[in-house]
Length: 109
Image 1 (cartoon, helix red, strand yellow):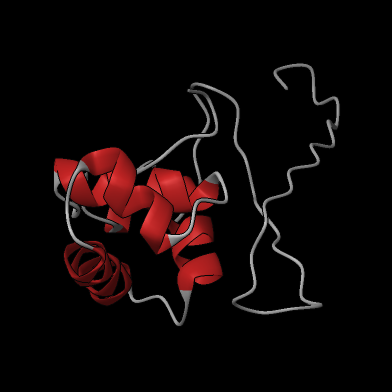
Image 2 (tube, one colour):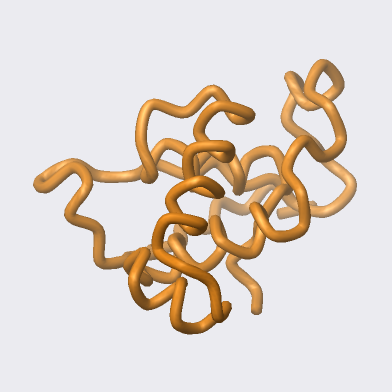
């Protein structure tokens, strides 16, 4: 917050990728950025990859994403794999955290 006030945000999604683990998200107010942001590229994901990652962040399974986007589950898995590779993520939860940090996706819909 501009006045230095700390705000806690709780976000939960259904994820069976890492049961029992928690996802930490750092958020910066508009106009203030992550010190490491200058070294990261503006957008490394395609529009479809961002769309798939956002749906994962909302707790959708690959099967549900495939149905919603009218593509095969295999195509969704390809997009997921590309997201992981491009973001340098270890798993889906990590990709969500990195996507949020880098501005590839947002919690606002």
